[in-house]
Image (tube, rainbow, N blue to C red; front, side, top):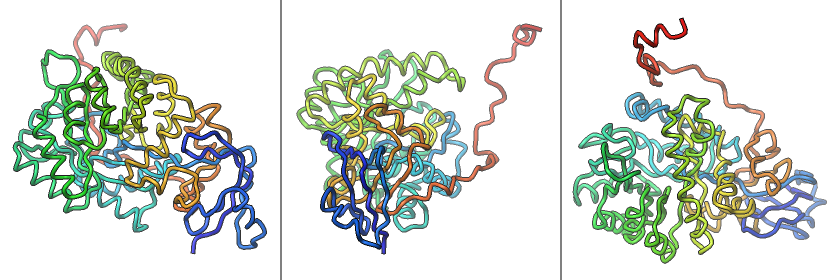
Length: 444
């Protein structure tokens, strides 16, 4: 039987967007069973564990709607696609899941994974073999042979890394049915991609409306939602019109895309954390200066439209793209909220709602997690300080005094062990530049 816990005197941010208030929360059998006077009525119960949260914030655990738990922080697509092994990827992902949990994330969506390992990790977490946040999982992302953001690294046929290439209607139907048979929570489609020497800036649409409509219809007939990677206006219009349930990135919208999204109220996951990290800190990790400018512009050129979308009542969700070298696990899961405040213009309270209540949609657990309300599952953070004053406090793990998942406190004293490098797991380049004679003689 799970421990009964009374959290007293905390400043509650309930995740609904409502104003904060000071009160008590009672946890029983993994559920928030009472709040306020109803909770305090149990204060004399000798079986209770009591936590005095005076001066602290009590809030829902964070949810990350775009986390690649199986990638293990590659520095390049080459590393991701050619330096990973299936069994080892699953073991390493289980190791990394605890990093995510210790950062205050009690749930995440991994929409596409390498080697179909996401479903297995999700089941291992749910069964107690692995300690990690709640997880919803996709399988391999569906791509056409045009490719995705990895360009020519994507093969013309078959599977590479997270990418499954489909050619025609039969391929689309077959692959979606295969993934659903294997137990995915979501179908992921890479709607846009990069093509060498393309004339238009950014990514191009690699799927037709008819193909997207077929994919959505097949998945929906089997009770599974569809999420798409979309980085241009046409892809957003086609995907949302075809019935897609959620859109990742949703950047470079035009007026038609804005109106389509608002009409359907399709949740959007901008996932600006990767771009923001590269733009702000890229020089610290040797990032290409041109990429810094490109990603900075993507944020700048899309923020105003995303604010309009938010103001129109369309759900904006927080996703961080954690799982790459620029977004390592357990480090940046708070940052999307910071970007929402600084760049899109949300209040701290609105940003927290995006990372909690609204993000429950990505877990397919709306009305079950994401808020501090009676009857909700007890995924709770107690924070030393108030994120309404400084949203970045949620990125300071030393300020997370308590983390509860399903009503059970996470033992933060058990740290994630340091590990050695795995032979062949990382890219080992000869150099970062070309060794000409002029360079060799420079400053000599």
